[in-house]
Image (cartoon, rainbow, N blue to C red):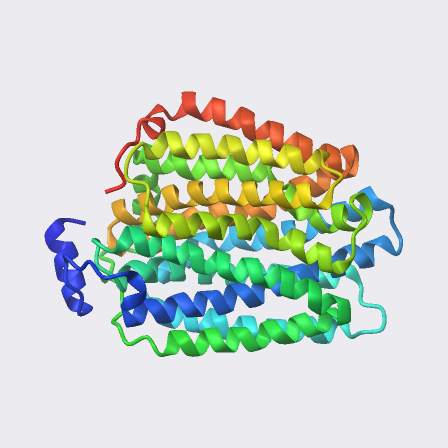
Amino acid sequence: MTTSDSGAEAASQGLEPDDNRHPLQIRNFLLLFLSRIAAVLGGTAQGAAIAWEVYTLARRHNDVNESAFYVGMFGLSQFIALFCLTIPAGILVDRVARKKVLLGTLSLQSVLSVVFCLYTLLPDPPIWGLFVLGFVQGALRAFGAPATSALGPMLVSRQVLPKAIAMNSMSMQVGSIVGPALGGVLIAFSTQSAYVVCAVLMVVATVMIFAIDADTQPQAPTGSKTEMVREGAEFIWKSKMLLGAMSLDLAAVLLGGATALIPVFARDVLQVSPFYFGLLQAATPAGAILMSLSLSQFPIRRHAGPWMYVCVAIFGAATIVFGVSRNIWLSILALMALGAADMVSVFVRQTLVQLFTPDHMRGRVSSASFLFIGASNQLGEFESGVTARFLGPVGAALFGGIGSLLVTVIWIRLFPVLFKADRLE
């Protein structure tokens, strides 16, 4: 997008191209920020409940390692949906008003939470039913995540965009830090209460998005759907810096998905109560939100590539510490360090994607980015579950942490252009 295009887009939304306001002073972005907090808060509280439910059902008939495998299978069910729907989701987000797409996904997520609640009220619910619902949840995320990512830049000027990206990430972390702790408290009463709270919060998130009054219709595409797919794929492939950033996060998160095993560590390694399970779930986003607060005030503007590589290495080292720890507070600190390091990597990647992607392609590029990164979380859960099946939960964490360190070294050689990336402007 050229400077003149950026100015025209900002003017169409009532924004000045040289706007220096804080993102939260812009009404429409504030609504998106609050909606994202509500949606992530509900989603993470529900995620904690689902992980606990899957592991509890599996432990009725299996040992620790086998049960950990089932937790990973739930992540795989979501990844399959995300993988299958990434392309159609990206096309839809680039053809339909992004506000409409987000309204639809949030509304359906509130309904899905009610279905989760009703399903777990059955006398002896089969575990495979949760995998089916997990597939539906993954499908909704496949459309909702790129719509949210592509909507944000339409609500602020390019001058404000780096801070807006940090705030957008922080909104996710605010929900993520409170959600797991809330989920742990609610699980102490019943998992169904977590599903009900999630449904209510999804309704709140929907209302916030409905109140946005900006024009969120993307520029009309000129080619067919096939041409749109080819155009998006060529853009990512030729942009080695973007490809390197996306694939680096994919490889690191895929191998370092030990956080999926938190229910296993809580119950059978650290042997703590649901309350401390909630604290463990909240530790990673707690570290991320502290880092995102710093980035929202002092965004990285120089040496972006080296910062990203260093933080991926820290991510791997923190995963190793979490795996060997037998002290609840050391485990919490390791997860906080993991979350802070991951936040830097996310910030660099999202800034690169949003600054260097034309608006009419943001849906496709954001959807591909989410597949690389967001979906890798679910695939990482599966990898951790399978590894835990053979190496045990501690061995799985060590395997993932060491793997992340090796990935850092390999990617420096594969994508030197990313290591040399300097200014995020």
